Amino acid sequence: MTSDRLVVDERALDAPTEDRFDRLRRISWWDQTRLSRAKVLVVGAGALGNEIVKNLALLGVGNLFVVDLDRVENSNLSRSVLFREADNGRPKAEVAARAAVDLYPTLRARGFAGNAVYDLGLGVFRWADVVLGGLDNREARLAINRSCWKVNRPWIDGAIEQIQGVARVFVPDGPCYECTMTSEDWELLQRRRSCNLLSQADMLSGRTPTTPTISSLIASLQCQEAVKLLHGLPTLAGRGWVFDGMSTEGYQVEYQRKTECYSHDPLERVVELPCRASRTSARELLRTAQELLGPEVELELARDVLERLCCPKCGTEETLFTSLGRVSADKAFCPCCPGVRRDVRTFYKIRGSEPFLDRPVAEIGVPPFDAVIARTLDRAVGLLLADDASEVLGPVVGG
Ligand SMILES: [Zn+2]
Ligand SMILES: [Zn+2]
Image (cartoon, rainbow, N blue to C red; front, side, top):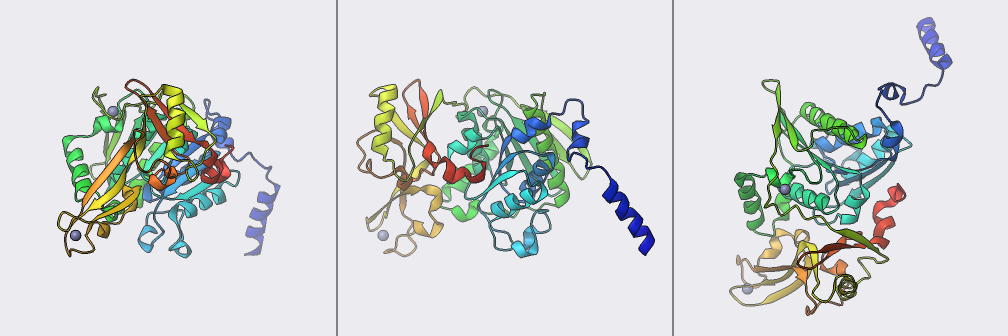
């Protein structure tokens, strides 16, 4: 055993230290500097997210923000290259971010344990050069799509089921995710929302039957499209690539841009305010909005706020002021009347006469580093709570 091993080891020791990215740099158009400067937001650290994060680390992407609400479970281990048994119970986003730094120590990575729809501020989307989705539900896709459009960011969606999948690229001004939604998609989305607005448990499903083989295939394509986007090369923009693993056939789908699409709502600009969500009231933001756009301005929140629950039977009301997604399903039932579901009162606009104007916006469902929108009939400006940046972005804040 001695001689062979020793020879190999010595050769390895003698080998000149090669640049880590040598093989990538040999590609004629490759620009490693672009990748090391890139800021990528990955939403979802499940089967797809693991593969996405792994690829981005190997590619030498410099700044990574990973979002996921869940914790690692045993059933994730068959599809998640970044998770180990010892990680059980830990937040997926944090485990994935740390594993990415293990793969590429120069990488700056932030793992954010939160819900992509309710906890992720618009500032994070604006920070990113490109957004990659590893999601399993329409609600999160739609929320990401709308956020990306507001701040003109491209996003690359991936979806998998069993051994088939699709990767698609959405760029500002092209057809967006919402443009691709069919009436069946809307029906499923509405059903999910109405059964009733308060079913967070459904949102955390993640029980789609999939394999690590299809997740690596689709995630690879998403990352490769991201590399091309970051290089300014033509991509799959406005199209999707569908792969059927059973027949081993793949084909492209071209999407049409719909004129009547609610997602097409880019902000005219984003104003960075020296404010934090936990210390700034709606009244202060409204005043700033009026200075910018005049007295007719309204504030608009990105999420519906659950104002009150009212019992149709006994008439009692409970005031909550929290973002809808933070309320668990059992809250819907009246504590006095067994089995009676209460009516849900929500709002998302603030006009200036509301009784809660002096509460910090964090208490009406605005996450840190979010932007509240100042809107008039024909203008929309984002008011970014910019002083939350370092708390939310952590190690990638300067990236
Ligand atoms: Zn659209
Ligand atoms: Zn009641």
